[in-house]
Length: 230
Image (tube, rainbow, N blue to C red; front, top):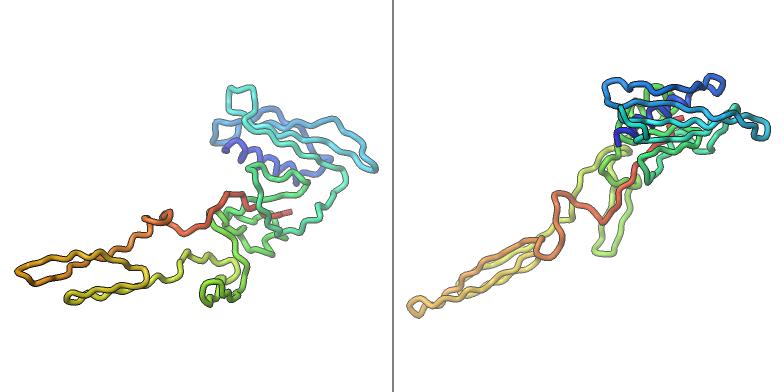
């Protein structure tokens, strides 16, 4: 994971380097780490009316000869647009960011410094979508189990988890008992000096019938949310 993060950082630099300024780099220590990176350039090839090179970024653990992470980028002498607007957010199934000629950032709250077009859209930091589900802005009403209005928070605001209220009640009188809603009970009759009495204990434990955790969540699989920066 750390090696790929270093490779992605180096690849971001390569992506914004002008084609004619691309240079190879021998293994070089990465500051404050036990890793080294290198940049390899392929021979220049002619494609239609422009030139291309393949740039390979390798990251090594010091003293190792095989890279822990390797990224390839195709750089062109003609700037090509990917057709994806800056600020576009995608669900991405890999820790290796797209090598499509653009620059993508993880949606982890990092600074947008150096990306003025993105900064104009989202502000000084990219959204932080780690560990949360995305929800459409606005509200609508459903009637599949009662009438419920589903409403988002303000655009970009983190909304805490919640469940619809669970209610119930019980009555415990002399020789009588009743319960409703989420509560249930067990009758315990006793006979003391021919005076019948009712003892009753109520329970509510969701873990007896459904999976429980310290958060509310649907069944899910994780992805990286990424945003187009340039």
